[in-house]
Length: 378
Image (tube, rainbow, N blue to C red; front, top):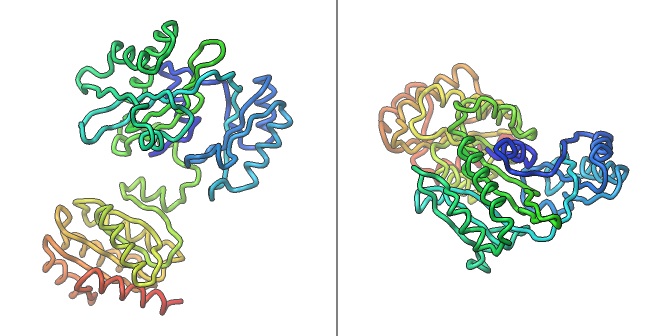
């Protein structure tokens, strides 16, 4: 689950990461009032879950409260990179001398967390890794002992920080690590980490991604949900289903993210447009299949449904029972095209046949049928 900048800053600040004073506004007048309370120059920042906000005009430096209100109104009234801006963060502007990068992420190859730092802050770290890999300094962290002060000191030296700032940097790095660990983050990033003209370190921007699998440990996360999340996406998230609404007419229900992407590709190959990305996950039981179909069939844009199941951990007979039950309860108004393969495939096909439901022999044929059915329903 991706967090907004202000949410990430609040979580990290609780562990000691220094952030600029600021508040969130949902109206232009609220932005003006916050700017007046802060005094001096402020920065108005669109709160949307997308990178490159500054280049797209989503961040504005304002000299007066009136200008802050004007910029907030501009952001609220115009979509930013295709996203509606519902909130802005108004912060006191910092007098920046140097911009650094500091981030904690999962190194899946090393199977442990990695703390990365770079003197090339304020730009995409991926671009820095591509063009100047030597500018990124990485420390792999032992999961049993975590980040140690000497490791953070080594990064401070590698960044070329003045010695008087080393202690502050170590404290900040340890706070970042503690905040990430306590919140089950797979990414905790400060970019830029500013060295101010006064000689302080301040997190001017922050980004966190927390592991959805840890929701049971963090009931407070439910209040951090993306405001642009649709009711169907919220319902799916609460049911443990990966669902993203798309703009097409052919709904997909698949088990596995890679298979879902392949299914959407084959739909596109036949001239159709996917209506969603929906992954019921491995080992999905009848109840989850039922919920997934309820979500899919609640979308008024759907003209056909393609169900593509490859049985491994997931059993085809369980999926088939869920489909039959869903049809009985929901009474779909659109055709369903079903392809089953793998574990208990024969049993699944038998269950569907008894319910007078046919199956497609291959994904290619299933996608073709779904596209034909969707076009015929227009």
